[in-house]
Image (cartoon, rainbow, N blue to C red; front, side):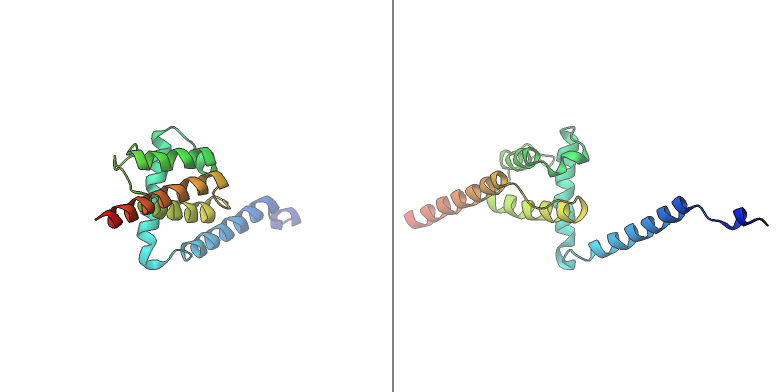
Length: 137
C-alpha cells in the first residue's frame, strides 16, 4: 500500500469530531432543564414554534424582538395555535420557558428591553387590577 492510501481526509475527520462534540453538547444541554418541569418548557417552546410556523416565520426569526412582541401579544389576544387567551402570569411563565430554550438552542442572550418592559407592564397591570378588585370587595 502506498502512503497516500493510509492518509485520512482531514475535512472528514474534522466533521466527525464536530458531529461528536455537537452530540455531547446537545446531551449536556438537555440536563440544563429542571427534570420536573422539562415537559412544561418543551410544551411552551413548541407553542412558540407552532406560532412562528403559522405566521410563516423561519428559525432565524426566533431571536427577533419583533417576533417576541407579536407572539406575546397574540397570546394575550388569543391569536395563537391553542386559541387560548392567556393571562399575564401565564404569559410570563411561557416567556421564561421560551427564553431558556432560545438561550440553550439558538445562541440567544436575553429579551430586548422593549420586550421585557411589555412583559413587566402586563404583569404589573394585572397585579394592580387584582389588588383593586380584592380591595373593593
